[in-house]
Length: 256
Image: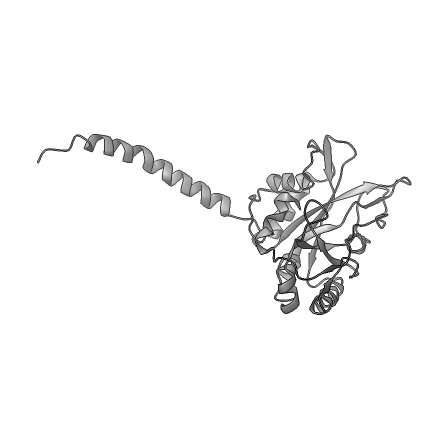
């Protein structure tokens, strides 16, 4: 039987395309592989205490994203950075007296007010995010470099965990009464997130008090004492009838 004139072309396409498809599939699988928290801590060690060339830009999460790249953590909207936990890089600032302080609150995850009303803390996305989280402080002394310092692994066995649970329950009680405000919570707060004062999306944040408490005994920047930030952000009290922003989990790329 005579072969179709198209047969050689089809065979050539198959020979060319199939390896490309296999390569793409292999690359995708490789990118999906995530390191564990233990592996991340081990990879962090040689990166600490010395300047990394990283030009400052408008992306507040630039230093966090760069650290993920250094550690081999894929950039995606996956619910966790690592296979079994989170990575949270947070900025410090140097005060006039030379001490260091948390520069701002630390974003954790988006907050759906309707879910806050009904989910227990254990059921919440917030709990899953914080249950095993590596907190890495970093400092910018100029617009061109960043220095990462010794991290702390925060888990649900840490004594500070109980205060976060109580904060969540307080925010939940408040939400059930129809009002949500950024003024509540010892360590945890929820406030609007996004550009402009008209944003209705909300997120959970950890206050500088949490960072101060977490790093009180182990903060390792030479001759530095971690103190409270002079001012932290809070939003005005607002009704709880806001849109549920579950799909905005990609907040880390807006940024966290």
